[in-house]
Image 1 (cartoon, rainbow, N blue to C red):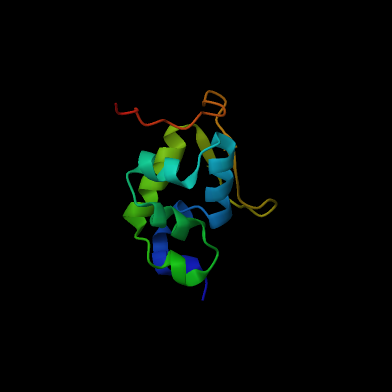
Image 2: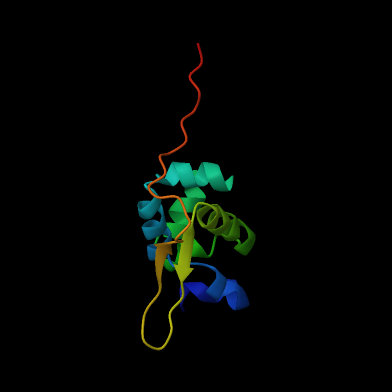
Amino acid sequence: MDWRSAWGEHAMMIPTPAQFRAARALLNWSAEELANRADVARMTIARLEDEREDKHETVSVGVAKKAVGALEAAGIVFVWPDTDLGEGVRLASAGPRYQMPQRKAATT
């Protein structure tokens, strides 16, 4: 059984684990940074990026969309597979390049 079957009709709206990892790499974001910007748990990002089927089935479509939304807001464009090419990611032409992770304010 393909891991996307757990998401049914929403499967094409959810990037593959490789797309999530590639998107973070383009932005130079850690998994923790993506989790913070998407307002999800760090373990959620780990599950979305894990290639094992049983990990994806534990993430709801709504939560996965929060991670997608955070990446798209930062300029990521998800490329979906067609008959000639596979899936991928790229930066939107107007998107930010190599955003540095947000730093937490130091407490004194």
